[in-house]
Image (cartoon, rainbow, N blue to C red):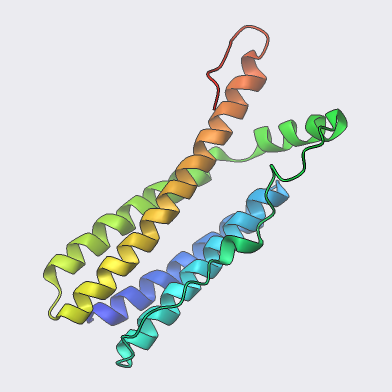
Length: 166
């Protein structure tokens, strides 16, 4: 299997993985993020397909997460909504997100390794671009895991523990 075929398979597997996670997610905002990540993996697939066909031009930025609602845009604070949101976030299976974070970290390492072993400058450039894309996913998944950890900590010990500001 050549580099392109391997990368195509990996990106399709990533898309399926995020769709599966989205289907298991309770919180609608997290579901939107995971669906956005699935779309990003599909975009990576399209980038690789174009590169495989010799189209090494500039890849347009099409961030699939641009449609995800900004939870901070609404400045109103509705206690009733917060009372519904906290339990939903607490119910999220955090291990799924940790596993996704680990997979994204592995992807970054793998694309870095493939870039070093690439047979041509084009393959090197493709691997570096994909590594950068996957690094963005690492940051996003790390933030989700951190948020879910903090919700868990807050719910378990809100009245006894003063958490750092984040």
